[in-house]
Length: 117
Image 1 (tube, rainbow, N blue to C red):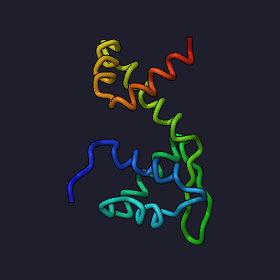
Image 2 (cartoon, one colour):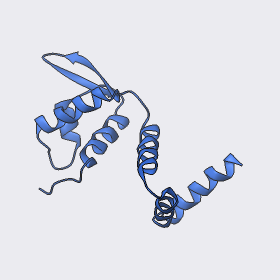
Image 3 (cartoon, helix red, strand yellow):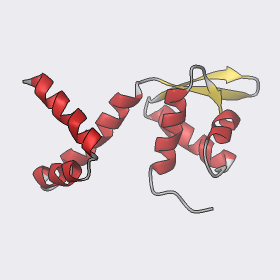
Image 4 (cartoon, rainbow, N blue to C red):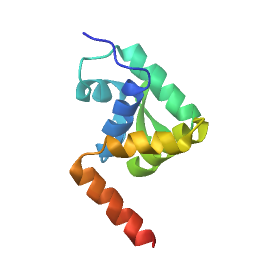
């Protein structure tokens, strides 16, 4: 098994929760993730997400089940804003971002920008 990049597993957990229509336990989350990360690793991520206010939990038996509190698009946008705000040269960051877009992604971005006008 290869190690994930920093934050990748958290993003994967958020994506699974975003696609779920109900609360999910740690075991249910683990089953839906690639590579079968350790139960304790998933719990650690869930506790951090709970501290950040990104998930809520409810008691399920002796454990808890978790659900996303915000929509996935808003979370992704907030992460992008965070990285952009920390950059020394935001214009350069945006340039690299745009040059890395697929044609479909570029068209979607253009449509959003045109709607703002």
